[in-house]
Image (cartoon, rainbow, N blue to C red; front, top):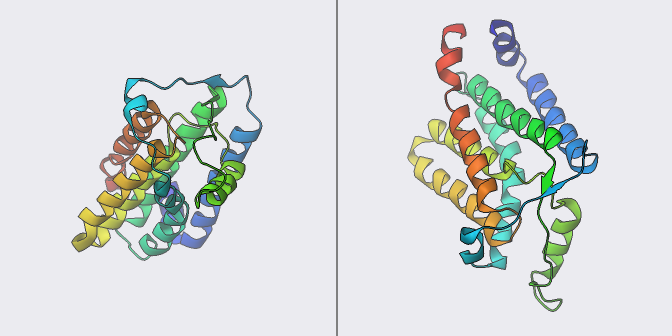
Length: 205
């Protein structure tokens, strides 16, 4: 553990590159090459009561650049960079491990976005890039909370705004029908667990 922490701390650009490769490559593999048949998750009572709001697609998409922006900004912090990197790795690897051993997804209904709608094109692109698999736990949710919470530790005057942003991204996953409530619950749980990383790494830093 000590060697890993020193490697992350002393080779930040290399560490970010490796983490991003692991995150993107293994996520892609789990999404497109599942090890077994995908289990379809059915919506529950809570999911059926959540309204469909197409405009929330922009909060959903925001989670992608948020990851890269977070690494760029947190990289400057000696105190938070190692903990953030390990927390991000934890939620990513745990999620991908679940995706591999328990491939899961949802039945996507595209008919609720009319062809004439302003939102049809962005949704069409999203549905091409983001397949209805790798749903539980939601990586969108876990990474959004990890990124925003660690950014909030650096920019303390904006921590509540950042937390609100993480909540908007979380809600967006359900309002545009990309995830179910159980996916959100799983992603949030992973994010909370990852925040205990500093307790285990502090003695090595």
